[in-house]
Image (cartoon, rainbow, N blue to C red; front, top):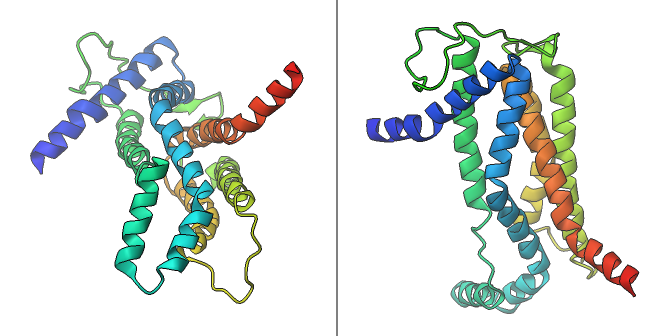
Length: 254
């Protein structure tokens, strides 16, 4: 366990801590430093995030065919599973492809939480700094002239509400795309599938959790979450509408 903790500290926590302090040395505003670190992380994770969104899109596009296979082999779960896996291979779709980016983001979020706590309660005798990173001696937690990065509670409510709203919009975009990809009429007497129930629940649970986190954790973490969500909304919007943009461009060329 200590080996895993040590690996996590050396490869993720310490580099993020030094990057944040290094940026703060150049731009002595903790809020701006957090935003720049967030943008840097999102750029580095761009290939993984893009793959995750495209994987979700592919999974939604093939859902009608998956349902047909499930209906065909509803009395034989083994054949149903084999047929579905074969179908995935034919379509070159990996149902687990969207999990890796989420796991990586969770690990980074945990590391950043520790980094923010360490920076907010900065100790000038910190031993985590690399030799080429100047020691700022102290960190001013007041950012943008008014926001305390160490604050938690109701003071974070406006930003927490905006962040939760962005997350809801992100989930809504994917849900609307899923609906468009299933043109067939639904049987009103048929019970909704587990995946559909979970997707609709997460549409509301995700923003609620974001709101709770925003009011519980330091504002610094909330600023990171806001910029991350904003970045992902823009990226998801671009990827989901890429085909539409290509069609418009092709029409304009004619």
